[in-house]
Image 1 (cartoon, rainbow, N blue to C red):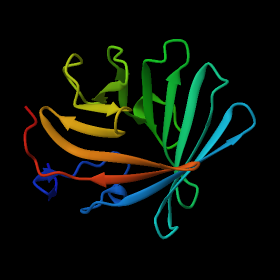
Image 2 (cartoon, rainbow, N blue to C red):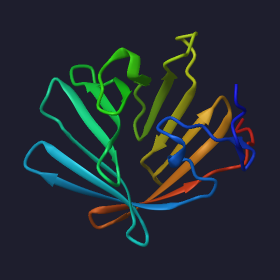
Image 3 (cartoon, rainbow, N blue to C red):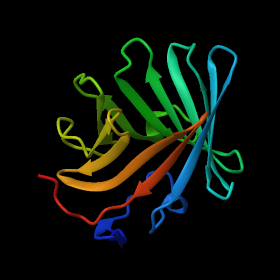
Image 4 (cartoon, rainbow, N blue to C red):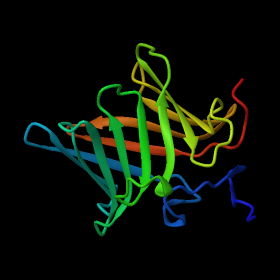
Length: 179
């Protein structure tokens, strides 16, 4: 088994391919465009205008679906949310919905005003009661998203709004505990 490369004292973990793992922080701009009542498209680029990712999807189907594509338009991941519950997402490789292509599932844990908490379960997870990662986001007073493995912060994303765009700053922290 290969040992993951360490960056800032934290192992690099790849879900979608090694081409999306960077050993340095990167500022990204997310541009959201709504087409009609239910279709939303996102473009993710750096400050120089280089396109990194595209995402599109619809809110009108029983399974809400988003397809994340690379800059050439090829599908990387497909995210499906069950519209009835709104608490579980399944993420598959490419545009697949086959069980063999399932990468991970995400469960929204208890409701907390002004804060979101997601539990991420990798497909190979043996203990279905313990998540592999936790994602915590806050909308007030500052907007941030933190990714944890246990008590260790793996990544932090800070948001700044600019008109119809969000500027994201990814900060990879050293592997310190957060007790």
